[in-house]
Length: 452
Image (cartoon, rainbow, N blue to C red; front, side):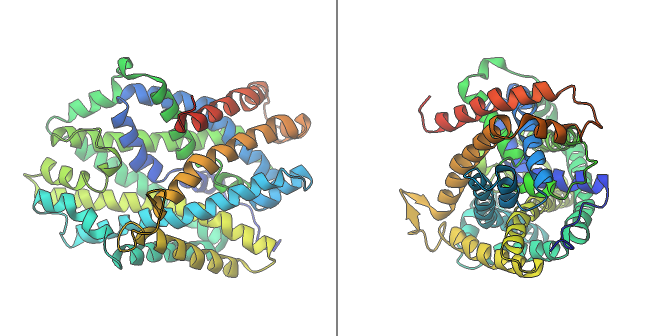
């Protein structure tokens, strides 16, 4: 196994892989509708503050644990805690990543279906039909499950080829492609008639919209978008070299992640305003509202509209796949290291088991809608438990672990690469991790249950 655990081969490969871990549907799907529901530019400013004060310190903390442990998330926490109860925080990260892989693959599979539907022209037609297309598709007993398994098999193919030959190589190909597609669609969207209203909405903050819900929503989105506490950041950091500047890497990844999120807003809102569609369409924005947005916005140029829609769903699939790779790797690394088996066997365990989870999550929204708990489908239960319980608890405990349990000297040595890089921000970082981050995460957790 020591032969299989290697470092990333290049700095650009490391940044693109880690950025790909963070960049996903949270940027291209969740961020735009969160922005639309919370007043546009004002939400973005609050979000940027949250990334700076919460996201980057939490990411650096996971970098420190992952690189120091040089192992899967569970073993990394075990090494630093010398096997005491703190190791279960690492295990929680593995479990969270594993469960998210199952239901996230369902949404990722939807992207593949929409690519297929765009190619054969199913999304160009009567607006009422297009609006109900997603409901009809999600109710099918076969198609959503099929695409869930397909995207997990694509992910499996990447993972079995290892860190350099699989994850890094795929990230070097997919991340630049994602950016090119994003920029092309942004350019096309911003040239539409009336697109300036969408840009005004995005960049002219309306501070009258600000309230406690907006602040807590931005905190939650920064956490979700940067893949904090899913085990991904910690696992990828275990492949970092000892020369990697952790703070610089966290800043670079956060900049890329935030840039993709803002570009996604620039891609969607000008087209939405041009087509007369409300920007606060919620979670349905991408899969229900946007097909009609593209049809209406490019009504005079149907071929262009078809190409833009196809490019958009390819972009969405790439974003989903880069995150799915990192989620899969969390569990794969755990199984092959803890069970002393090959990487390939560990990957098979993850692919098969998450395919089963994904199939049941998908079916719970259609033919097997009786798979419910407290009125929620199995899919919604997985989303709720991981996103609203496991993630904030994992992040909260990680901050306490790094800020109060790990010896300050060890944390500073990792932060400064044993004195070889500047440590001028170490005091600020430690203060944020000890006080600001735990309180902010606790606020998110309590607010979602209506306790504050």
